[in-house]
Length: 61
Ligand SMILES: [Zn+2]
Image 1: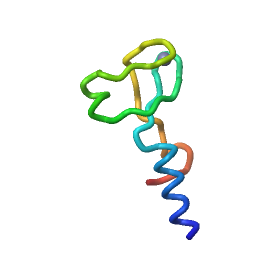
Image 2: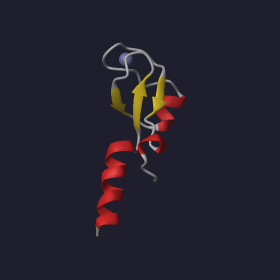
Image 3: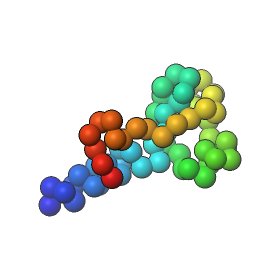
Image 4: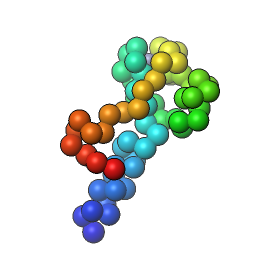
């Protein structure tokens, strides 16, 4: 049960969540949109996004 809950939380927190390289704002988008550069930061308009890091926080998917 606990493991199942963890998976749900991980997916909610990390799946398709990207971080702006410019202002570190988090935004939810898809990998395809990032690859096509169709998504941009809503805060500063930058298109330089990276995946939110999961490993460094001790969480594995
Ligand atoms: Zn930004």
